[in-house]
Length: 227
Image 1 (tube, rainbow, N blue to C red):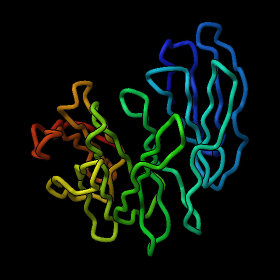
Image 2 (image 1 turned 180 degrees about the horizontal axis):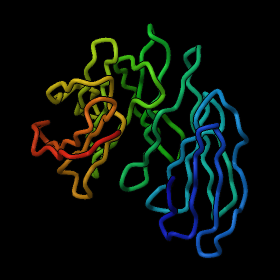
Image 3 (image 1 turned 135 degrees about the vertical axis):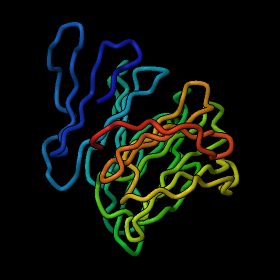
Image 4 (image 1 turned 45 degrees about the horizontal axis):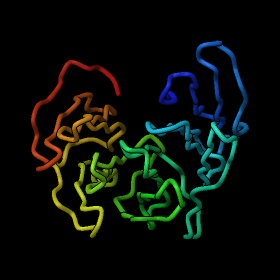
């Protein structure tokens, strides 16, 4: 789920691929942006800067919906052949970039695309390890758009980590200490860009806080019982 910046709209992506839009103050359903399709999951993300919604509209497609002008456009379709399942959508804190994490087959692995929201231009593509389910994978950008934080879910070796990457050069800056589990399922960044929170939960329900500048562990939040 994702709320518009003013809280007036709520977008919901469903397990069967459907994406719905709701009027929050009126508690009314507005419309479906895509119809059920059990070959992929529905994912949504509102920009924090304006009423711009990114949502899956096909297994290999992400569309942008400008709710102020009622315009719709396709912002992402991978150039590579084969099937890519979108696992996670997010906007940069300033709303200028859309970050798309998608998974593919064992031999191609997963990848993250950073797309400029105003033009649809791909700014950076980062390949990462193969993860074997649609639950794994996430990515975020720093508030200054200089860093990209990417989940590395290596299910084949039963471990996962988070990488910090220089967005301009694509160079890896750091990688967190690998954790034992099938993959990362959740990633969040504090508003000041200083702390990353990660979670897996398939067998390890611990939430971990990381220093976003160094990749060093700050604290573990224990006591959770599920992913």
